[in-house]
Each structure stands twice: as C-alpha cells, then as structure tokens.
Image 1 (cartoon, rainbow, N blue to C red):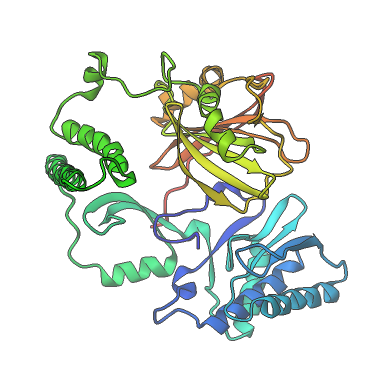
Image 2: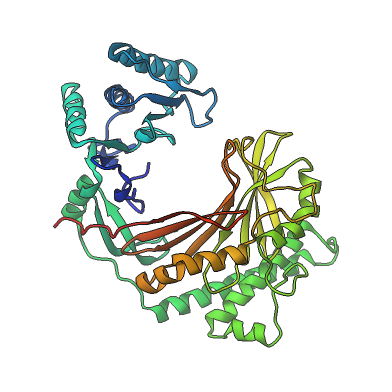
Amino acid sequence: MSTGGLNRWDWHRASAGFGFYLPEPIHFAQSGAAAIASETFKRACHITARCLAQWADTYRATPSFYRQPMREGALPANPDARQQFVDELFGWFTDVQPDGFAAEMSLRSGDRWVLDAHDGFPGPLQLRPEEFVELQQRLTAAGLPPDLYYPILDQREVVEASRSHSGSGVVRGVMFYSPLQWAARAATESQPLIVPSEDERARAFAAACNAFREALLLRMQQLREPGRPERSTEADELEDLFLPVQDLWVQSRGVDMDQQRRLGYRDPIAGWPTPPSAFQSIASALPALRRLHPDAFVWQVFSKRARAEQPIRRWDLSLWVPSIERSMFYQLINGVLFGPGHESKIDASATAPIWPIERDEFPDLIDSPTILENVEAHGGREFRERTGGDLGELRLYGGFHDERIAWVASYGRRYPRIGMRIWLDARSGEIIGHEEDPEAPSAPA
C-alpha cells in the first residue's frame, strides 16, 4: 500500500479539475481497532470499483499479483451492463483465487487513470470533487466508513526522528501521515526520540565496521584451518566482502579514501582507463552474459548513485530472455558484472532492443557521458543550483510498440520534495520532454 509512513503520491500529478484520493491506511491495515475485516475489505474494494467504473471506459484486471490470467479492454457502454461487468470481474477474482483476496485492477478514462490498483487493492483514486462525494455516499450507504479514502492534500508531511528500518538506531526522515494517522500520532505522542550527534554516529559506525571486519577475518582463518580445502566458495565471498568493509572502517576513522586513490589505490574498472560509460560497462560484461543468456537483449539500463559531477560507476541492466520469457536484472559496477541475476515476470518482449548481447558493436545510440552533458546544459545544472537538488538517475529504455528509444534524466531534492525529468531521443540527442514539479503546498495547520 502506498500511503502513510515513508511514501507519498505526488499531489501535483492529478489532471486539471481532478484530485488524488488515497486509501486510509488505518482502515485498510491488517490489524487495529479501526481496521476493517478481510471480507469487508473486499466488499469496500468492490463498491469502490463499481462506483468508479461509471467514470471510466477501459479496464485491466487480474486475480493475483502473479498477473496471470489477465483480462483487459473496453468497459460496456451501458451503465447497468458496466455495473454487472464489475460484479462479474469480482466473481472471477474469487473463482480463480478463492483463498484470500489479492486481485489487481486499473480503471482508465482515455489517458487518465481513475483507479490505480495495479499493485493490488485498494489503490489511489483520481476523481473530481463531486465524484469523490458520490463515492463517500455509496460507502456510507453500504455501512462502511466514509473516510476509507481521503484527499491527498490532507496528508501531513513532517521531518521527525524515527526508528531506523532495522530498529537499531534513531534517524531523522520525512514522514507522511494520513488524517487518522496524524490524529493517532497526536493522541499517543510521548517522550520524543533523541537523534545522536554526527560524532556519536561516526564512532558507533566505526565500532560496528571493526567488529564485522574482525568477524570476517576470524571466519576466513577458520576456513583455512589444517585439513580444510585450500579454496571454497564461502572463502572467496568473504574475501570479496572484506575489502569494502575494510575501506568503510578506514573511512570511518577519518582517512580520506579519495586521496588514497589519487596516490595509487584504484578500484577495478574492467581494464578501462577511467570509470566506464554505460555502453563500455555492457561491452565488458558481454562474455559472461552470453554464457548465461545467449538469446537475450538489453531493453533497459539505469544508473545507481548517479551524481552530475562524478563518474557513474554503477549501472543496472535489464535483459529480456526469449527462451524463458522472463526479464533478468544484473548489476554492473565499474564494468564488472555482479550476480546472481534477479528474475522478473515483466514482459519486455515488445520493447525495442537496445543491445542484442550476441553483437560486439556498440549500438547506434548516444552513450551516457554525452547524455549527461546534454541534460546538464539543458536545465540540469540550473535546477541543481536553484534548488540544491542533484541528479538521481540516468535511464535508457527501449520503447514499447515502436516508440523511440529514449534516455531520461531524473533530478530531485528530498525535502521539501521537488523533482525534474528531461527526456532525450537516444539516437539524435533531441530533447523530447521536460517536466519539473511545482513546489508542494504547506501542510494544513
């Protein structure tokens, strides 16, 4: 579910005259005094879909997150037939998956989505204010809470101390609260969490790195005791892990690793004189990829930890493998392929191939360094200087159904959140799209 906690749907994406409405997490949670029961959950989703179908013209639906079987197409034109069709879909959900309710569904009106439960119900809604009032009336008439959904502009956004994901520390972060979550927070607010100083954090991290480093050394010694094999998979993996942990431990003690690299220390970069570009990284990985997936083609490449003024060292590679009808995902670091790959059910068979891995020649496309220069010159640098944001990602993706292959650069700032995207034709370098988020409004008092 994409509401509450750390996530927020961008309020400004709604079409003119429409608003975003989000599921109230407290009602749709699995437990708690205000949570609705599983059968009531399904009934609420059914009533919502029935109501929203009258403002949509196409649908896409599947009984489970496996997305098989899948049904999609036009909704019946007759209002009564449309309501009956939604009832039939929910009956189909139950027939295919009688144990539990894990269906996914999208309703659209032309190019605008009305219900976006493509990752499972309940999903966000995009409605006119008067349509949202009608939905509330239908929910109330069915004996359901009228606040099952709420306007996204009623969501609170605050920076506060909270437990880390692991639960082992306290960090500051942006948190988002629905109206009921905000009311519950105010009612239960107690002793605030204390955020450690940066010096305390650094000392704790140095101690943790050192403890892990010593544990790695101990395990490597254990694996080399007399009578054990000289080499093993575990020993190799421990050695690969030890060096980055050692680096982190050294840095946590105040040693400048960038200076160490200038003095001669270097990361492996697959034989390239400088950190390789996106296409150079793929070229280095081709022999290994051919052994793994000889019939595959690259349909998407995107950066990790990109920064506008630094070489991009990490790329994620998306392959479509016809022989298994699956997508495979790999990571490239400085041109070195890291695995194992991750399998996905994403169907990329209709995408334009960026690079069939059977070929050695670079594709007839513009490589990442030139793209970075172009987007910086066409708004990226100005955005960074004006907002304090930074480049977050470069992504090259094959178009679906004869659309052109494009690069997209995503810039952003975490708080207050704002972003910008620039699209370029990957063959000509032409700017084909530019979009910047407006500043979000202040949370209501």
